[in-house]
Image 1 (tube, rainbow, N blue to C red):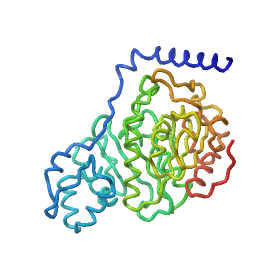
Image 2: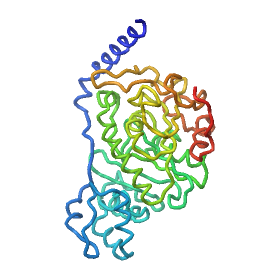
Image 3: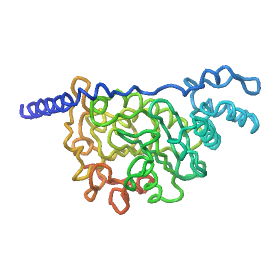
Length: 352
């Protein structure tokens, strides 16, 4: 009875918080960007070597990889020239081809806010200018990496903010750079801002609507990594990104799923995720996410706290983490543990 009372109180608090923001949250509600990028219709109408091109919306990444394997270098480059946005976002296409396609697509926008993404040396694996923009960047050599990690960010991440000038080791790109530096040269880390994230704290952040769309995109992205021969990834999911990771967990081949600053994963326990991945959780002592009620009611809230002992995740030390975004700051115990997980060196920590 006491537990039921606490649940009702938490639910009431959640509704009060959301209700107090609903006036602006509804007005700022984001529409999830899904499906293939602009230009898909022209791509479908085209051919290469007399063959129809793979449907960017429905062709499995492994079939896309086989299609490109059947083309010669000149044919591949001609497709990049004619359809840079499609090739650049086509999971299963050769990685180096996607880098070049996205460089051309970014330059073609003519928008100053994207210009830095086309700088020499940047490895942009996906770029979609629709909405607030989405971008996926690789740090390291994906083609030769022994280990691959994917950073899945939370709210307020998009193509223009994900690498904004801010405190080091925060934001998707900052987190990816920090993890890669800690994990070493044989690890590639991908900053995956590949879905429409919530803006601020409001109804979008309190519901799973954007996370569901993001999970579908994350699953296809990991299938694309597998199709080009990359190692099975480790998913590092921050804040609302952990909701995405939780919804995608059973459909990915990730070896590990690491959540930090998580509001919940739409599961009551690790078993409820239905994944073979090892599940890890971290929460710092001053992270405001601890004040978010761990409930699911009327489509709001994300469920149990992954950092609680009852959830069953493996503990990541985070006692020296400051705030909500400090988990990958150099020198923290959490970053050292993350690097070890990324390299597959930590397998036996006891469940809390």
